[in-house]
Length: 323
Image (cartoon, rainbow, N blue to C red; front, side, top):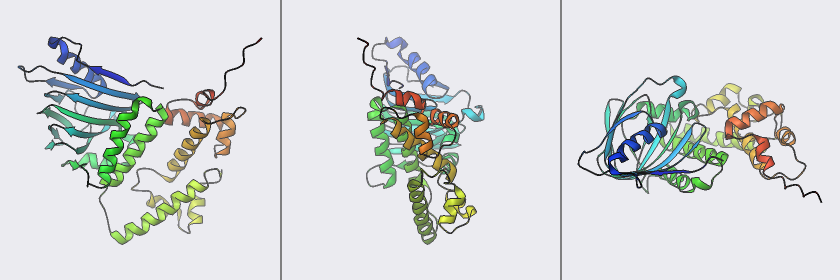
């Protein structure tokens, strides 16, 4: 399990504190050229976890500003989507040609290719999550590409407020969550925020599609252990075409196949973490529809950052000492 990291300028001499923070931020976030009011003392503190390419952080700091050193130069695999929840103070962000002001309890979804500069005009407290663009729901990627406003996450703002509470809870508890658990929790946060920010369409059509999507998801949950579960079998069970099924998932940020694989992997992780003596990784994989143990292990490691054998090994009792 990756460890929670805690960093601050508290023990650093004031003359070196800001330079140290500049190095830390470039390592933890993106490459920024930072500056601060020359007459003010500076302080910063951050708690964070990194699991594979996921970074989640809880930051408190004084006034400072930054501009991108390498804006738009990232290779496709290096392009990031971030979510920033500002809890106190004010931030001015220059993003995609627009100037956005974030106050307390406001949230911004942003794309690293469009981020230009920011100015923390007041000491502020923020929570942030960053993921590679390809791991973020498609609708959120589209929102990040066209964002020209910030969104209120204050109580009363519906699903956005729910997603904000999820992020607050994750950052509060991130020191005690396993790597796989942290990724699952963050994915749930992204899914909720995705649902909260996706623009509504025709109400009747949305209601019918939402109802069908619920039925399909329930069917998938009920048949995860069926090796024959696939788009064709799901479409046949619901008297729709495979094309209609794929269109049903078009705005969810995933596909039928990816959802089946992800849910099977999550169930396998849960079962492996509770495995009794004598259970094997292959037993669990085959029970939940994986026909190739090597492919299962690779997919499991990619999803959770650990191997299935390491999860099940933690459940094995230590061998009795030889007399």
